[in-house]
Length: 391
Length: 195
Image (cartoon, rainbow over all chains, first blue to last red; front, side):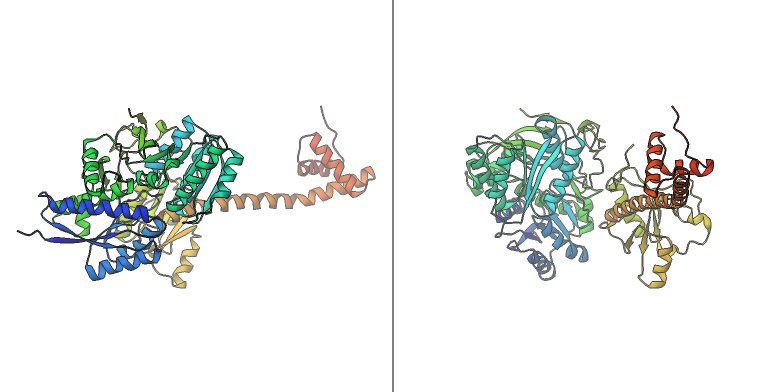
């Protein structure tokens, strides 16, 4: 018997400044769709309707309008930047549809019409800055793309650093897609900061990392770089200059879990031994699975029923156990820190000892406290903010 | 102890007077997410605590009984607007709101309204303190002027020198110019420094 099809929109840019990440999201989402359609566990198939906004912000609204009006989708997986999500938000709220958003983001949003599958700010920025303050430096040089992700990441960083008695030495912003990075690299070489925090996205980040690596190497400097977004496919794009970047993320290809080993094997069988899944791609894969499992449990595609079915339902994903926190529609997941190596991979050196409850408004953040003094969360380990060494 | 940041809402107490059930539920849920304790108020109960913020639905306006205005002036008010008609806005303005939200409510906007209310309240109270200080100084100008005239007369000094003498004496005696001027006008002469 043929299974009924449930239409699902997949919205990710295949061109523009962050096309690389858009492609990764699409590849992972389609892989999940194919797996689900081939599995006996689901009594329906997903009909994926892919749309490409080409990195043009206004196009996100247009393609979602088309998916909702003309295709009749109730669920959309996609968007990468916050500005694209903000474009889609009014239409999914007005028409009562559900956006499954895979990317990590800056928080301070909680729509009933969005399931936030990526990391919240307490999952990525906090562990990274805390680690650096405790182990490396209290002086930061920040460089990022001029949009909300950088603004808010820098704001949180500044509060944590100032509270620890440290200083933000500089905060330099580049427009999205800007490739003229030399003046910032020159300034870094001149000022010799102990740490550079890179919140650039897409091609700007790749240009910056290459120029930074060349200039610091020529000057005989060893300045660690931090990132909350760098991933394996980007290491391949940047090349050898990408090694040594301390990165905060919920997913790395090197996670030693059976679910991840199987996922990576399936990925490489599909996309080639030379390719690697990314954090946002893996998150899109998780988003499609969370959606499919919720659809199966709900027995309907009605968004209220699906949202209720998704809440608290644990899924052993490639990145480890994840579930949606029903109180805020964000994902409970495990933060990790790693350093990029010359083999286009990450060596994980710390991870939280249990999945951490999302805190999109950072209500539990006490900037003056050490991580151990932050308010513990009830759903997860009481020691959730603690990090442990991964061997 | 340092004042809490307007961006940090955990542990704050909010008095919530909202008529519609759905709006009440949205406020309650969003406040939980933000770590704000919400205390529902129907305007008939007596309030036995000072809230950190009050959320008042314009459908309850005007607040006729004094007991209903007990929070007024003691915490910032966020008005919930159901209509933008001038007659309703006039009633809302009587509450001197620090911020507002428009019904029907959605979770977006509530955090911003709270932060703005706390920040507005903080800045207004700083301004009030500054105004009070300036008013006090303005009132004491008359006393300073009287003291300067007295010293000019008793010491045969020009006005700048008389003022400089008062200022120096005030510094030596660790008093404000206004305090010393009050003593000069009361005694009729410049008091000598002791010790």
